[in-house]
Amino acid sequence: MPSQKPIRVALLGCGTVGTEVVRLLTGQAADLAARVGAPVELAGIAVRKPNKHREVPADLLTTDAAALVASDVDVVVEVIGGIEPARTLLLDALRAGKSVVTANKALLAEHSAELSAAADGSGADLYFEAAVAGAIPLLRPLRESLAGDRITRVMGIVNGTTNFILSGMDSTGASYGETLEEATRLGYAEADPTADVDGFDAASKAAILASLAFHTRVTASDVHREGIASVSAADIAAARALGRTVKLLAICERVTEGDQESVSVRVHPAMIPRSHPLAGVNGAFNAVFVEADAAGEMMFYGQGAGGAPTASAVLGDLVAVARNLVQGGRGPRESAYAGLPARPMGQTPTRYHISLDVADRAGVLSQVAAVFAEHDVSIAAVRQEGRVDDASLVVVTHAATDAALRSTVDKIGGLPVVREVVSVMRVEGEET
Ligand SMILES: NC(=O)c1ccc[n+]([C@@H]2O[C@H](COP(=O)([O-])OP(=O)(O)OC[C@H]3O[C@@H](n4cnc5c(N)ncnc54)[C@H](O)[C@@H]3O)[C@@H](O)[C@H]2O)c1
Ligand SMILES: N[C@@H](CCO)C(=O)O
Ligand code: NA
Image (cartoon, rainbow, N blue to C red; front, side, top):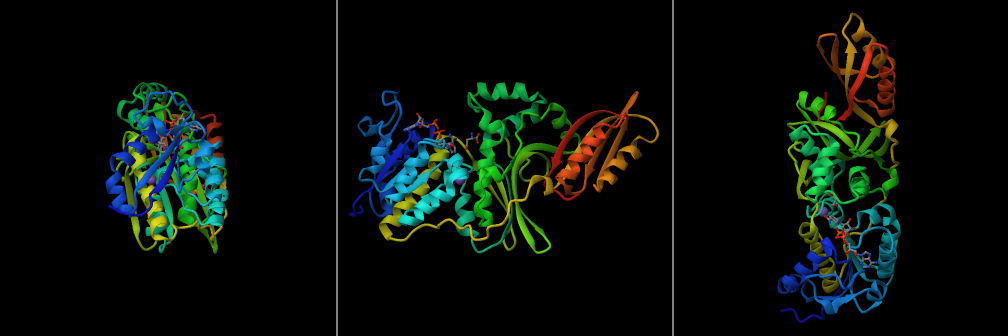
């Protein structure tokens, strides 16, 4: 057993993740001590409701999180969530030289500059593996394992709730509303699912991923965000007809134009081929596809949410910061030296799938094609199927700027021969 002085840990928040952090920390105390080289001791747990029943030691509970942070602790683990009071508590901890482990993506996506500066000021560690894709080791590979490579793209499914809903719509053909109800009933979607279904959660994670991948400070406001509420059963059926499926993707891309580089960071639903590795990621699982110059393509897959999986990542970080305290040294600092500009969505190259109901008569296809040509959008594939008195027309484009594609869709929707724009969706994951 290590004889070193214990590493004292303050836990802030004891909900879904916090409860599991306590369980792992106490249940594996001897192994953790051996791995760290000193006992890791829970000094206190800050909660809001001390009388709520919890499977944690009652004598450690306090409602005064600020006093716990200010007490004689070495590490602060934050699993409260939200901006305040988490921001102030963590800034106080870091400024006092206490290392921080947090799962709080919303906070990091807005305030990582301030938090990193506070950590640098005192030499404390700031670790946050649990903030993106839960248990899946992803941030450490980006920050450390791939630090010698040049990452060009990070694309993934980073929200379990929306993936559960889209997978359900795909397998049953049901509407978005019906599937959301089912997800809520089964406890996957929260009572207020806004952060998930409107893409806020995924956008925070995309900002964190892009910052690490491109050594550039990216915040949530740099991320173009679209949720899944407008994905219809018709969109899913249109994807299915083309051998594709719809996923909510977080996409972080390095865009090179001449000698200018920028980063495009976006969250939106997109059709991907069923043969793509991300297409087989169903239910509440997460997966992230990374492309780097030398390493090539990599995929990280596993449980992106849930108390125990998220606590696994928190404990991994806790062991890392505790080891640094015992052995000396520090984890990686923020690396934002590249400072690449964020590319506006309108200027980002994307591809569209457009499904239309059109009149079935001579010249319709050429009228539609003319609108694409007018906007300099090149067509990759067209499929037309005649029905009794109209026709279904499906167009898949080559890459063009998102603004040109949007204008094309607007103009096509206004053509008298177009009866209905059935489905418009971006296409990712293959060259056409
Ligand atoms: N649940 C997941 O699957 C998951 C996955 C990855 C990351 N996260 C992140 O982990 C964090 C915690 O998530 P959770 O699911 O455990 O949330 P939760 O709502 O279950 O738990 C948060 C707890 O913090 C408590 N709290 C609120 N304000 C407090 C305060 N001022 N002082 C002390 N306690 C306070 C709440 O009462 C609640 O019990 C969030 O940042 C979340 O985004 C969660
Ligand atoms: N609400 C998130 C939790 C994990 O961050 C999800 O559904 O993926
Ligand atoms: Na992770």
